[in-house]
Every structure is written in C-alpha cells, then in structure tokens.
Image 1: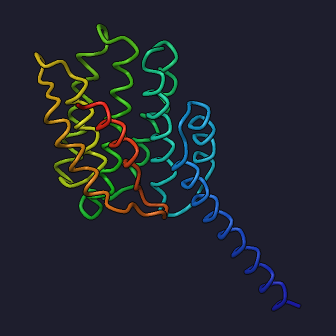
Image 2 (image 1 turned 90 degrees about the vertical axis):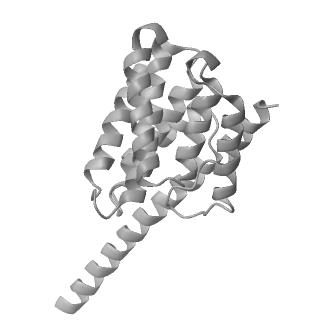
Length: 211
C-alpha cells in the first residue's frame, strides 16, 4: 500500500511538472503570435501565474508583455503607467534570479526588456519623463550590449532608438537600418522553445519603414 501511495504521488508530481512545462511553452507559442494590447495583457496574466524553472523566464516574459503593451499605447500615454510599473517590477525580479557572473546572456535579455520598459515611461509624457527615463533606457540597453554584443533583441532596440530619435539628438536612419539588418541576420531561424527568440517581426516592421 505504501509503495502504491509513493508511486501515485510521483505520478501526480510528474504530471504537475509536465503541466507547468507545457503551460510555459504554450504561453511562449502564443506570445510568438501576439499583436494587440488585448493579446499582451492576457499573456501578462498567464506568465505571472507560471512557476517553473528556469525561474527568471516567467517574470521576464511578464515584463516583456508589459513593455509591448506600452509600445502599442505610446500615442495614449495616460494608460501606460500601470504597465510600466508592473514591467519594471517584473524585470527587476528576473534580474534578482540571475547570477551576474555566469548568466551574462540571460542578463542581457532582461536588461533589453528593462530598457523597453523605461522607454514606455517616456511615452507617458516626453517633456516630463524624457530626460530621466530616456537616459535610464539608454543605460539599460548599453548594459545589455556590453554583456552580449550580438544579442539580436538588444540590436533591434538600438535600431528602434536610432530610427525614432531626431537627427539633432543622435538619430540616424541609416544606422537604424544597419542595426536592424544585423539583428535579423543574427536571429537566423529563431527557435521555438521557451528561451527568448522574439524579434524577427519587429525587425521586419522597422526595416519596412526605412526607405
């Protein structure tokens, strides 16, 4: 009887673990197809409810969903702040779960998203928040590139900044094209597992705007 109980417990535990793993994979698959505020806000709730290893990924993806929502709402800045608040908190949580000496590539992924989150705060009110959060966004992006210079998502964000920054303040559309092209090339055939692989659609959309 005791052996049967132990076997049943192991089966339940294994099923629970498999369900969690499937939940993360399914959420990432849905994220690959997400396009709207509704998509990203729904996925934010999904990722925030997942408790799985590697532990940094659920808060990372939660932060990414908030960042993506903020970018989509950039012309309606008054709605952004709660998403920016949650995105920053989740990115900081993801950072706290990583080892600064052995997980540099993972840290680069999180700093890239944190850079995006700070950029969404600029959208709230460029005149009020631009100086502070624009600088913080740039600092986080530089951290990401220093940790992993070839990270295609960091290169995409760098391209986005170059494209949308006025020329008098350092914007350069040709440099943006170069960075987005490099990002797209480095993505190659993006993976389909739970590790960050987004960016192809973002690069293609940005390159489509650059004549």
